[in-house]
Image (cartoon, rainbow, N blue to C red; front, side, top):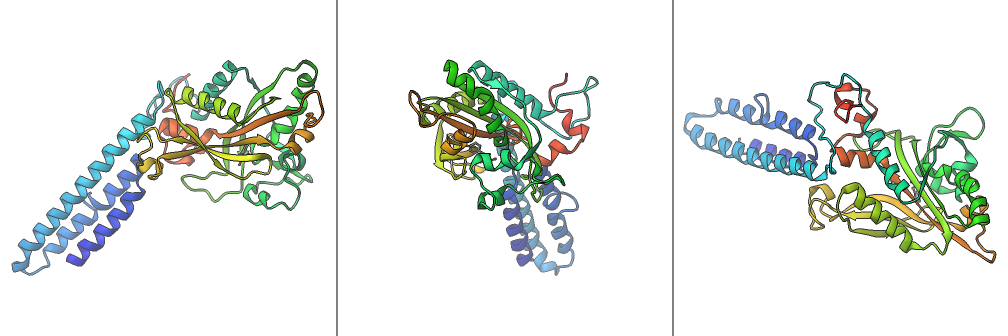
Length: 354
Ligand code: PHE
């Protein structure tokens, strides 16, 4: 009996560590604390032990039950307050157990996040651009300084069409070349900086789980002008994120490798829940990874027809690739990425109706 309790305790704590949303919390409750759960199974075992041991083991099981219930309730209130804090001002909270109630239809959560970001960037002078989902090898890779056989292609395996060298774009960076070519002449002739964001659906050959999808959304942004530096990148990212989260955010850059930026970074924000001290939602690191970015590689600018080395001006720029799907998960407290493509009205009607 003691061994069983120890074994269940170990299993419980192991599962508890992975519980990050209401759904997995409920699964944990069903596994351990419901009528058909492990604790009830122990109670049933009690009838089989000799009478003189019944009292001792009964107390053991009751204490065990109390311990699990307390830990369960602690984690539950942590998750609830975490979701409340994560919800950005004005966002509706997500609860997939609510009945469908949107007679007029509702927007998809990713559309909502995308529109909000578009408004923020437009207010900072950015143009919003649209781009194809089917692209060619040149735009998706070669123009981005990723030649054939470059190992960086392995991270972005995607779906290839039978047409030679056409594929479903694996990242929104695939639009960079077209945007540079569209706005470059204006930059050279009138000095108007290139400032554009381009949201879009991306595809990758992924093993699907709660955090990975083969179809997801990103929002890319680029800015090119005279003397653009990393400080400009930090300024724009910080301003945009503070706007999205409705409060001042602290950001940090870590080195990150992407062939189309040099230097390249991973931009993290300080955890909004614990303020950087460390908590379950930031895996105790105090930081949340949000957005890869960097200074656009001169080869990418050259492919886009931008003057990188001739006087009178040498143009430089930054690029970032924000995960829209990830942001929507954070904003609405959706624990499982699969909910977005599920077509399940119970889930998708939880958001703002039309
Ligand atoms: N396109 C990259 C990706 O999807 C992200 C990125 C965009 C990195 C812009 C740097 C600059 O992995």
